[in-house]
Figure: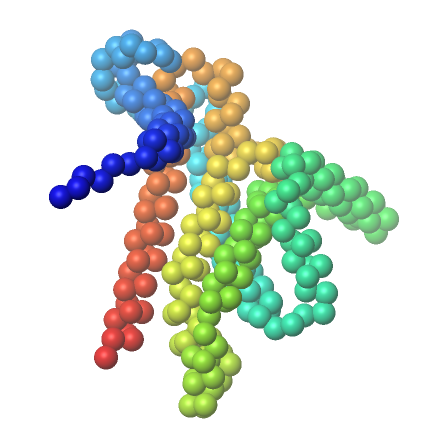
Length: 295
C-alpha cells in the first residue's frame, strides 16, 4: 500500500494554524494557570505553590471595587441585550424576507456600525444622552418642576445608553445570521401550513420557529457574549457605574496580585458556560427537529 505523504505546503499551513491557536488561546491558558498561584505567588512564573488563595481574596473584594455588584450589572445587561438581540433580529429577518422600499439602504445603515470605531460610537451615544439631559432639565425648569429637577440625575445608565451602545454591536451580527438562515429556508413548509388552515401566527410558532430555533439560540449566545466582554462601546455611554470588563480594565493598573488573574478566570468560565449551554441547546433542538421528520 502506497503511503500518503503530505506536501510541504500542508505542513506549512499546519504550523501556521498551530501558531495561530497558540497565539489566541495561550494568553488565556497562562492567566488561568497563574490564577492558582499559592499565597506567595506573583504575577509571573515560576509558580509558587498551587491553591485557591486568590479566588478567596477575590471573593473578599479588591479594594474599593465591588466585584459582586459589577458582576451583577454585567450579567443583567448581557441578558437584556441577549433578549433584545434575539427578538429584534428575528423580527428584522422576517421583515427582510419581503421586498422593502429602501431595504438596501436600511440594511447598510444597520451594518455600518460594525465598521465604525467602537470608541467613536460610544462617544456619540454619550453625547446624545448628555444633550437629552440638557433638554429634559430645560423642560423641567420651564414647567416649574423644581422638585423633579433637583432629584434628576442623568439619562445615562446601564439599561438606557449602555444598552443602546451594546445593541449597535450585537444587532448587526444577529441580522446577518438571520439573513443566512432565511436565504436557505424553504417556504414550502409555510405554504403547506397555510393550506391546512394555519394562521400567520400559528405558522410562525409551529413551523418557522422550530426550524430556525438552533440559529436563534446562536444569536442569543452572540448577544450575551459580545455584551459580556464589551469595553470600548460601554466606556463613554454607561454613566456613573461600571460593568465587570470596565472594572477589570481599571484594576490592571492598580492590582499587583494574582487576584486579577482569578477575576479573569471567572469571567472566562462564565463565557464558556454560556457558549456550552448555547451549543448544547442548539444541538438538542436540531436533534428533536430531525426526529420529527423521520418516517
